[in-house]
Length: 457
Image 1 (cartoon, rainbow, N blue to C red):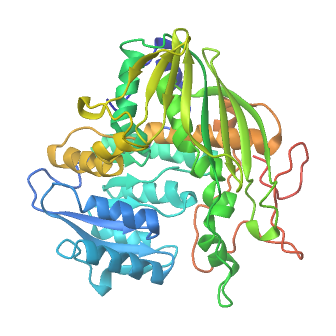
Image 2 (image 1 turned 90 degrees about the vertical axis):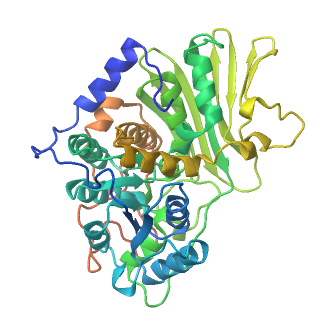
């Protein structure tokens, strides 16, 4: 089960959400880019970092025959070469990329899309709406990592193109892999169909960890390429870590509740990561999301060392509490603390077998995403995750708007915002949309203050 059961109110809310986007362009409905019965699916990789290399490896590791890597692209030639070398070592018989199909530069994605049947979009998230648009317009099937945008115009574009993808019979998977993880799917069944915790009345979601990499500027690097290389620290490229990372947990909240929040308020800032070199993003966010039925979800994420970590979700119901994490340790207790359900992979009890035992016994959800996508292509089955990918991305952006501004933000205001962080076109010669001042500081949002150039929302 990849789509939750929804209440009538939640279903209406979701229809309203999709309906607020611009109507899809009038396009002739085309057949799928890959016709059932063909011998080969040519895969193109756009974005050759660690996640992109991993996703391409998973695409080449399905049970489907005739899947080959055909072309790769990255803003940096050395990253494209590195990913290709790694993939050749792991799958030498499935990598069919010659030198003429290794592309570099911010606009290299176009050449990959032109030559492939299935494209993997794993660049910095700011590029995602425009790469998704290009792939859909070209009639390609798509795997794209989360989040799918960094601003409201980007979300609206993804929703517009999702409709076109449906019209063109294209298959789309978004890398919110908990939706493909057995313990989460079984927990959803227990909550929605068996009612083990009753009606959800509240919850908490967490991604609290130690931080992320940083890359020093090279002497020969332009400001644009420096920022792209350090994309995680710039709102126009990343959307802040509440969007890039914590979206996983936020997506689980939307999934289990059955819709998006109607408002958000919260707080955030920089307490450890305070140097100018760390771009624009915060090192902590705390958001209170309020949903249409009055349920409130408290959301925490932080990048700080030496403090407690947590990456998990929990929901309180009228009859008990549900505890989830991606190690596979998913269970529910009643309000007296008695266990009323526990996830058992394949019916096996893994108690006492160490943390992550359930995860080790289950299929890898990262792999399952690609198994499912390629099976849908071969069997011509409907599959389009872009809608919930956009909805959960917008929920994360809503939270960032609340923490950056220090104000309560309504869903409709956020979704319809015209603030655009990511330019529609980026080339090697482009100026970055944000620049450091004379002291090296980039514009950083300060709640309650309107600083010129700061990404307040």
